[in-house]
Structure formats: C-alpha cells, structure tokens
Length: 387
Ligand SMILES: Cc1cc2nc3c(=O)[nH]c(=O)nc-3n(C[C@H](O)[C@H](O)[C@H](O)COP(=O)(O)OP(=O)(O)OC[C@H]3O[C@@H](n4cnc5c(N)ncnc54)[C@H](O)[C@@H]3O)c2cc1C
Image (cartoon, rainbow, N blue to C red):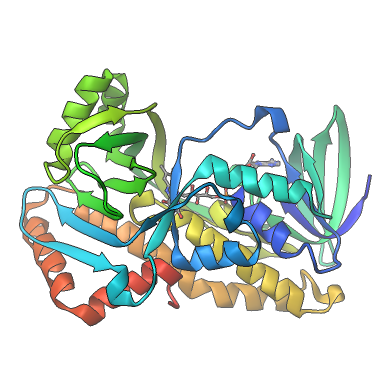
C-alpha cells in the first residue's frame, strides 16, 4: 500500500469526494480514506437544495449529468406564522434559469462514489482514521483497514470527516451552539402542484421548508427535540393533518407522506480552519442549521477553492504555511457570512418574542419592497458571500 501522498483526504462524504475529484487530473498523488464500507452505505433520506453556483461546480466535474432529475427551484416564497409580511425571490428577476436545484443526498453520494471508483484517486472504503498529527513538513494519519493498522504521510491533510473527530486541526477549537431543535425530513405530496416553488415558513418552534422534489415536496420540519419525537411517532394521517395545520393552506392538504427521519441541529465551527499541514473543510469546518440550505453549498465552495489553491502552487508548496494562509483568507468572508446569515435567521425568526414578531413581518415586507436588497439576498444564497 502507498505510504506517502501529496494530498490525503480524511472522509469521502460529498465534500471530501468533491475535493478528490477536482484534483484527479492534476498528476498529484491523492488519497481518500472513507470509514464506510461500500456495503454499509445507508441511503440517506436528506434532500439538498443546491445553489445555481453549486450546479456549475458539479457540472464542471462531470457529476451533474449523473444525478437523476434534479428539480429546479424557480421561486422561493418566504413567510412567517401568524403575521403579515412575506417575500418572494424569483429566478426570472435574477436573470438566471433557476435559484437552485433539489437533489437527493443519497444519489449525489452514489454518483461521487462511482466517479471516485473510476478515477486514479487512491480511494479506500472501510478505512477508519484513528489519529492524525503533523510536523512542519508533513502530516501523518493512522488508520484501520481490513483488520490491520496502517500509516500514511502527506504534504497536506484535508479533514472532511463531517466534524466527527475531535483530533482535527492542531491548536483549533470547535465552537458549538446547540439550537435545541431537530429537523424531521420526509417526502410529501400535496393537493396542489409545486410549480417549481420552494416554501420557507418561519414559526416560533423553528422553520419549516417545503422544497419541490419530483412531483412532490421534500419536507424539512424543524421543532423542539420533544415535539420532533412526537411528530415521528404519529401515523401518516395524523402526521399530514398536523403538518397542514402547521404549514397552512397554501398548497391545500397533504395527501401522501413517505418515511420520516430526524437530525439534531446545532451550529458548530472550527477556528482556525488551518494548522500545520492540515485544513478542515465542509462540515468539519462548519456545520450549519439547514434553514437556508447553505451547508453543502458552502462545503462545496471550500472544496473547489482548496483544489484551486493546490493546483496553483508548485507540488513542494502544497500544505505550506503560505498556501494555507492564502486559502483561509480567501474563504474567511464566505464562511463567516454563511454562519452569521443562518444563525441570525434561526435566532431572529425562531422565537415567540412579541417585539421581534412585528420586526420580522416588517423585515419580510421591506425585503419584498427593496429589489436591490432582495437581489443581494438571492445572490448570497446562489453564489455565497462573494456572489
Ligand atoms: C436535515 C438537513 C438538511 C440539509 N439540507 C441542506 C440543503 O438543502 N442544502 C445544503 O447545501 N446543505 C444542507 N444540509 C447540510 C449538508 O447535509 C452537509 O453540509 C453536508 O452533508 C456535509 O458534507 P461533508 O462531506 O462535509 O460531511 P459528511 O456528509 O458528514 O461526510 C463525512 C464523511 O467522513 C467520513 N468519516 C468520518 N469520520 C471518519 C474517519 N475517522 N475516518 C474515515 N472517514 C470518516 C464519514 O463516513 C462520511 O462519509 C442539510 C443538513 C441536514 C441535517
């Protein structure tokens, strides 16, 4: 087995896989260590709203065409429970074909997995990294694979493990804010068709999103952990009635509900994201509330910009302090913008403070009446902070 590479990627989730594929034609030695075995890849029930900018990245990597029928979002309708004020963002006003696309997480994961298997990347599945460390000249990872312990060194170690391991970047801290919210996800169908409209409705318990997906919607229903547990226990009919009462009558009743799954929600981020010979990206760098569908979009931009940085330096400078400083300064604004934007949405819109109630309605009306501001919000959601 190879024991030294240029770039070692810990975690072959969507972000780690994207980074590896963006480097596949570089002539560099790239290795991905992924803990999941091929046979233990459980279908993840999440759907992801990908921005138009993310579509462009996946297209350039040849992944987009492998995704089965992404559903386009042409309009986003934002409202809040129990008050006036709403805002509508539209692709037509922004002069682009769609504000975003809804894809199935499992399909994206599978397409990236297949592309890695067919590439020249050293891709090991069932490889669990147990420890990482770094010197000024290289990083080291210990990992278990096929019942034996192994070690590999690299000029640069890219940590894309979803933030699961605490042994990340030397000297960095992981900051965590528990929102005490859980997302319940499911595929649902409504009496009225979606017409490519995504709905985001803010309620005191948390936001509820309906994203157009195929001929139905992908639901992300945020609630307190206790309420989410109760929602999971309901039978389908009671679940659809509860959802109708919560979401309102905009789409008529709910007529079909698929399997439900839940995800606990928090904000957590690593600071700084770089240390000697190491960099954290994707959820290992920042895990966001799904309120504005920013998490993977941000992680994809991390992967794309890191690949660009690696391709711009000479091989001997990969993982150098200068390269990492340049990368982190380029990513700082986008990352901070994503964290602040989603955290503010959760904190301002997900509570029953009466003072904030009126300001929320006013904010949505204001957003709707000020096209430049609306355009700014739309661009931020489509291309990130520098959009
Ligand atoms: C309910 C919900 C809805 C969401 N909706 C959206 C959305 O609409 N749009 C959007 O952009 N984002 C969304 N997100 C966020 C998105 O899912 C994440 O940002 C994205 O999955 C992060 O990808 P990642 O590759 O960084 O991490 P992960 O997907 O967590 O992948 C990490 C990988 O590392 C591997 N790994 C972990 N530890 C080790 C180890 N020790 N050794 C080897 N391998 C290891 C794991 O097996 C895994 O494959 C949503 C999230 C949730 C919870």
